[in-house]
Amino acid sequence: MTCKLVTPDQLFFEGEVQAVTLPAYLGEIGILENHAPLVTLLSKGKLLLTLKDNSPKVYTVEGGIAEVRNNLVSILADHVEA
Amino acid sequence: MATVREIRNQIGSVQNIKKITETMEKISTAKVKKNTKRLASSREYYHSLIGLMDHLIQYFKDDGLATDHPLIKSHDSIANSLILVITSNRGLCGGYNNNVLQLTKKLYSTLKEEEKAIKLFTIGKKGISYFQFNKIPTDQTFTDIDDHVDFDRMASIADQLSDLYSTEKVDEVYLVYTKYLSGGQQRPAVEKILPFDVETNETEELSEDYRPIYLFEPAGHEVLDRILPVALRIKVFNTILQTNLSEQIARKIAMKQASDSAGDMIKDLSLLYNRARQNKITKELIEIMGAAKALHS
Image (tube, rainbow over all chains, first blue to last red; front, side, top):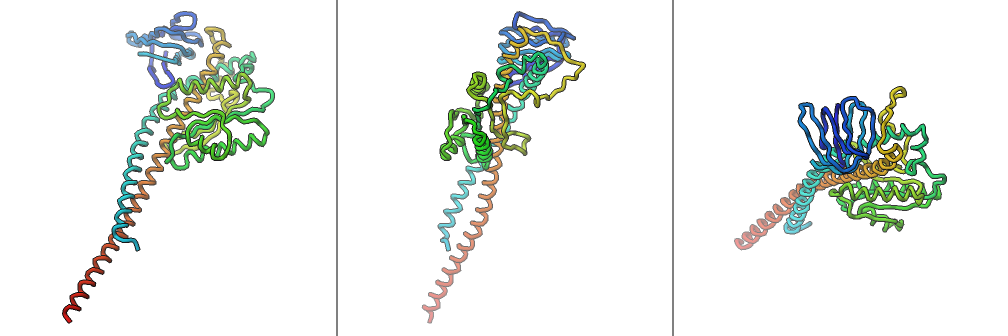
């Protein structure tokens, strides 16, 4: 599963991941391989990426939108802090 | 014929000008690099968002949800147009501003012929003074938009456009800017940004048999409400980045040409200077020899 984290000025992350936990509109959502297509607004919170080697990567995101489709998780955030 | 001293002064001032244009060329080269990077890093977001928007619009097409959205739906009568022109704050960039303004003028008179009321928003001092000179009234002007412009600033302008459109104060919005095609090619372009064009935006096909059934959080139309203004913001932001980059490229080329012709001029003037100097020496020699001869006899 591929994950992409971008803001209007910068590409923060792009690569293979095992799992994504993101702060969706109604609460945290965990996304694994073959997740159903999903579009959600983001609220403020922690974004956790679990990489292929099981190491975690954490960002703070605020506002934006995320799309899951075809094993591609696109996170279009308004603001991101690494 | 100019005296030796006059020519020497002339060479000096041309050399000074050349120094300035060379420096400006170097600055522009650095800025081109910086702006190219900025454009590239915003491209990812731009494509993802526009792609997602296209998916959603197609997804909602059958429900009529998308076509009824205030930013997509065209108004019944189109009487008020808005043109947003992007020019630069500074000159010395060749035909860059002029090209955009000529195109704007053409669009302006076409719309006038269709008897539409036109609102004009101008970014950049060069555009502002052009419209002032030609006595074309502008409704809003922005002079704080340059290389350092951030997303939030452009977002506020884009939101203003969304507001004007959804409250039906204007019925269509055009953007006139300089499109960046590649490092060697930029050209002025007109783009209609509102209402959102649903038909021509299909960058990525959704084949008939594969149509994802999305889960939405919150409900689909709320997501659409939220994403369309954002799409407009990023579109305007991307346009500004392209325009800024094109401006720097235009300035770089203009300054390079200026430095080159200054170099040619110095060459010609040096030739003239040496000839004048030689003439002067020859003349002095003749005078001295003439005087010596007169003394002899």
